[in-house]
Image 1 (spheres, rainbow over the protein chains, first blue to last red):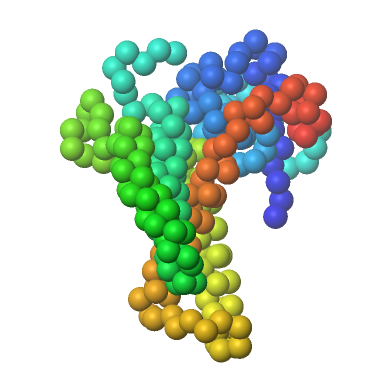
Image 2: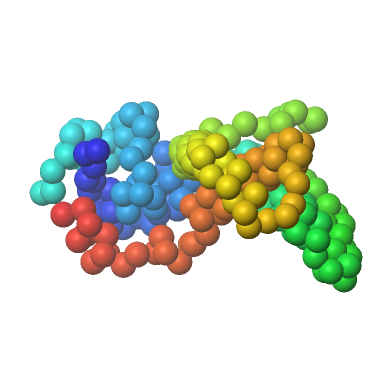
Length: 68
Length: 169
């Protein structure tokens, strides 16, 4: 099964946010953010879109199927 | 973010899921120890200790469950809360997936070789009720262990930037 890579940890750190602050901002648990960042879970479309809206970037920039 | 209204927040849901898994594990493990010690004709002392453990488990499991927040809340008195957080839903799905795998594999083992094992190696008689009970216990233990494993570690999540970056880039 193909895995999705993401830039969430990078974008979060660029904005100086903690996992908890990002989680609170998009109304998910901190565990959701940490497991997405470490690629233990692939998020649903809803959470992926929430993250993309929050970081103000296209979802396909935030999530990719290939390593950058 | 503070939580002045004690709402059913995503982080609270994660804590609740952890406590539910712990309570189910404690209860299932207590029952399993007693059932195994009786099935294998363990010494009386072991059985007595097992029963004491079971009594403690029966006492502790509901307390842990009741403190999970699943049975209460500001919005729904007497109504069970539902998990809506992404991680909780994924963890629940992973738990059920693992249970289905374990039960299917166990069923295949029972179907193909249990008869040989029981007739050649053990001199015990297993009733249908005991077999069904062991399936329920196995399912409960598998579910609880899977959930607890997914939830176990806050330290593991605090990966340094290098390790996260190396996995993503």
